[in-house]
Image (tube, rainbow, N blue to C red):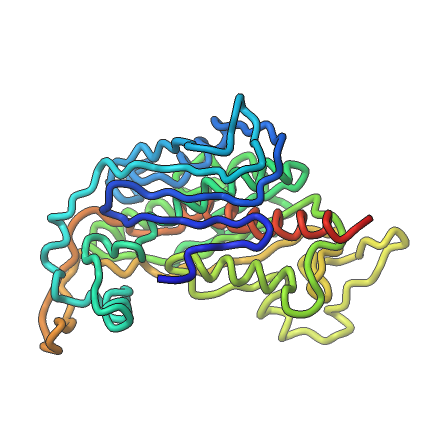
Length: 354
């Protein structure tokens, strides 16, 4: 399998499967001398780990990261940073029912056709458990660009949506509830809705909004490596993501140019920010904001028709421990991937200036 590496100057290469002994990765390109706060890295993993509330999967994984190399006496050495996260709470028997059955809307069928073999236990390498590796690398990236602030939050679940612009939200409230929504009354409605969906053996989707502040002018490239294009690629690499929009997004298509243009202030900032902090593929110093759409989790605790490896129509029902809504646990993943994109351009910007 190719494509196990993300990034250019700061590169993350990962390994492992959902029900294997462990997952982990190697981070290359991290400069020497960074005082790495290992507790902060673990705190990011804790935000993503399963079993943290009644509205996520009940799988109990401590997700404790162990650094194997590249860090000495609390500082990065400039060499490869190796890390591992042990899998301790697999229940592989929950997947014996789909050894030869393709689960609807999963990667089972395409993976089997591509490779001729697949790990049926939780999706193997295609499982979202892989994203724990991304959160570790993203936490390191955040510390490299600590002046840049990245805040993601749940902005909708099903038809329930935050009604305020992000400028009117208190980001300190994001972690105050299980759904990671900074608007408390809306958060309560979202949580209740997910609980009801879970009782039905069903799942629900939603959106995550991410706001990036204090971004210097000049990150990104004007042609093929546009900043928004790389952010889009990163977000669309996350399991269950079906859409990405930044700035005015699709709403901007309903506007006239005279309404949409961001007019300049004398200091180079803009009076409005419908561009979403990026113009011509390059950051302009304004807030970068984007929204990511997540589909409903594909595993249902309901009976569905599907096909087996012989093409026969069969009936199946999901078993085991699954998220009724992936959105709350995906918030730190969105932040991590945004950080990995930004740190790559930050390092590139440093190498292209005298």
